[in-house]
Image 1 (spheres, rainbow, N blue to C red):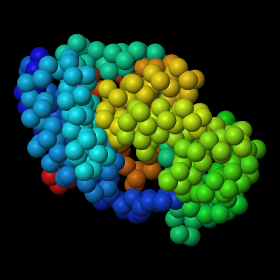
Image 2 (cartoon, helix red, strand yellow):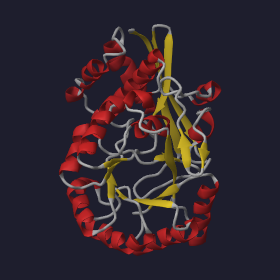
Image 3 (tube, helix red, strand yellow):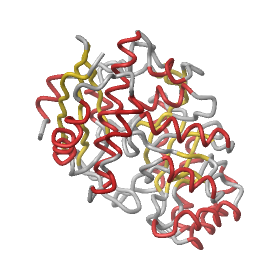
Length: 368
């Protein structure tokens, strides 16, 4: 079964307010919708939470990747991936190229599943069919009080979440400790709380913060240190605290994940399928983490991550945005997203990735 046609569409949805972390702003929800036609089947997936470069990803797919993919056997996924990855030495922005490769690769896996009548979860290992699900939250908002953060956490529990990834790293360690302390008090002891500094602190402040929050039953401390030497600095944080360290969403290759593991910098890896070249490379990263007893998380992207994390024995939590204002794609465009009950998302084994998307919404917000 050979690839006959590829379509890539960029969508961009304005948000009602800024959802900012320690080192970034989010004012739009963006994604790439990719469709591949082969043997009478059509895949349809969406990837990414990019802010501005959706049209550039569409250009890369159409001009650079499509000529390599047309005519390829969908089951020769490793060969196609290598053909696309071979463009990286001469391409100026490798991050954009890997994101574009991810769009094509995920759509190919969707086709493989549809051709075989199996979900991607089943194709990759089929370890479980339910995962705990947590909401990303705790964003910095002017005028937000500690009581407001407590009410936010309570809203996630009411929405069926098992926990929250809480944003830190934008204030002093002492000020952010008070915010997390308020969240824990509101959540209760049985609610999962992980903290994410988005590379916001130097190593001294990261260690100070980690020691402050040790009594709060924090599952992991994500991306604690500045980007320019984060692998070495995270290893120092990890040695200085009992709280596990998570990183990997900023890596774009499984080799980058290997460097994190080799440095003793991580207990969890949240390699992002949409940043790192798709499912083909994600499973390589998952395999090397398994051999090192490092658990797999995933940065956002529940539409694909539900299959990946449920397929392997060392998968952890799905991530979503329970706040309707943060992710209209999760709330409205993904029409058959998994049922959530008692903090668990149930993965339904429809062929491929099994996504049903709102076509009117795609048409309305298409920008390229």
